[in-house]
Length: 171
Image (cartoon, helix red, strand yellow):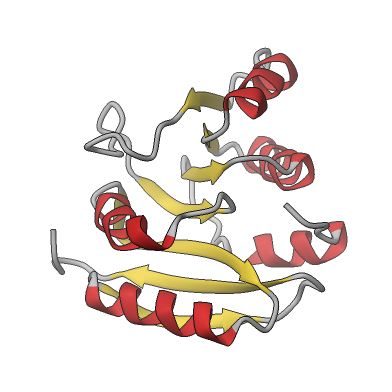
């Protein structure tokens, strides 16, 4: 993962609307700053942070770093698993900073849709000014029952795509 600016990341986290007992999900294959900021944000706001590590080495480092933090739950997560819903826990916000291969993106969105609460959000990072990827993700989101898709341009190396799961739509 390329560099992310800490102050800009703090601004991005302002999209999370205050509400008690929220669950913030995160699919990550690396990137300590993003995880650190999400963890700190969740601690301050008394939210649960579910960190799904898609890389074994990253998982090992996260276990050492976060094992004593009771608001952080860490899972060694294989994206090929048949279902992403764990223990019936739904996410209000799902951040995706791991790489999703082109051939698995639609399946990824379908599985993610099932674990996001109604009116919850999915937040994806794509390379800066990669308009083809932005268009592909936007189309896939719309085809898989996500609406109100927008991009946010606040990072030097990434564009943010945010989309909302609407109540009663799809899977």
